[in-house]
Length: 310
Image 1 (cartoon, rainbow, N blue to C red):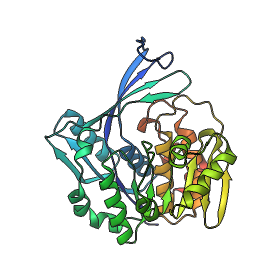
Image 2 (image 1 turned 90 degrees about the vertical axis):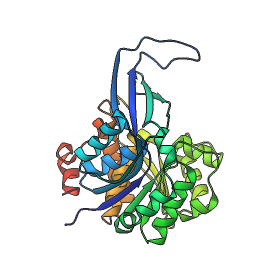
Image 3 (image 1 turned 120 degrees about the vertical axis):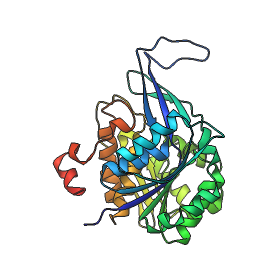
Image 4 (image 1 turned 180 degrees about the vertical axis):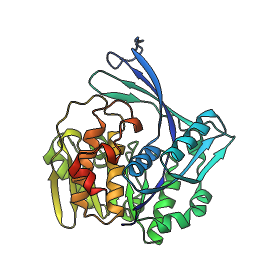
C-alpha cells in the first residue's frame, strides 16, 4: 500500500514550556518547577503527527536564519518530512510560543509568529505541485489569513481535499473561505467564537456544527476533548464518543487529532471512521508531557490501531 500524502501549510514555532503550580492571574509572578523547549506551531505539530503515523508529509512554512530555524529544519528531517518548501528569511526570527502548563494539564499559550508572518502567495505558488500530489492539504490561522485562503484556493483548484483548523480563534472568517473548505475542524472555543453560540455540551456542539455547516464547508468536525467530537455533513450530525484518560498535558492535543485525521482521510478513510481513530490518537497524546514529543508513532499504538496504519 502506498503511503498517504499530506501537505501542511502553516506555522513552525519553538515552544518554550514552563510547568507551574497553577496558571497565574493578571500581574502575578509564579515560581515554576520545570522548563524545557520543544518544537511546535500548529502546522508543524500536525505535520509531525501525520508523519509519525506513516504519511508522506510536505511542510510549507517559513523560519528565520537563526538557531531556532536550524533546529526546526533538523526536527522536520528527523521525522522524514519534506522541507523543500520551508523557506528562510533574515527579516524576522523563527516563531516562538511561550507555554504555561499546570499540574492538571491545562495550558496558556502566547504566540510570537515572527517569520511565519512573511509566508506569502509566492510560497504557495512554488509549492503548488506538492499540493496537487497530496491527498489532503491542511491549513490553520497562524499565518496571514490571505495566505491560508490562497492555499485553500489552490488546493481546491487542484482537486485536493482540504482541512481548515481555524486556530487561533477568529470571530470572522471570509465566507468564501468557509465555502471552499472540505473539512472545517474547530474546537469548542473556536466554534463558539465563529457561531456566537454556547458550545459547552454535546447538544450545543451539535447545534454549532450545524450552524457552521450551513455556512458552506463540506463537513464540520468540532473537537470536544475527552467528550470526543461532533461530525456534521450531508449525511447528518453525529457525536463520536471520546476516550477518558488521566491527562498530564493537553498541549497540542487538537493538532494530534487534525494530523491523525489528515493521514486517514488522505488514504481514503470515511470521515466518521477517521475521526473515531483520531479521537483515540489525541487521547494517547495527552497522557505524556510536551507537544510533538507526546505524539505516538505507529510502534507505540495499541495493536488494533497499529494495524490501521500498516
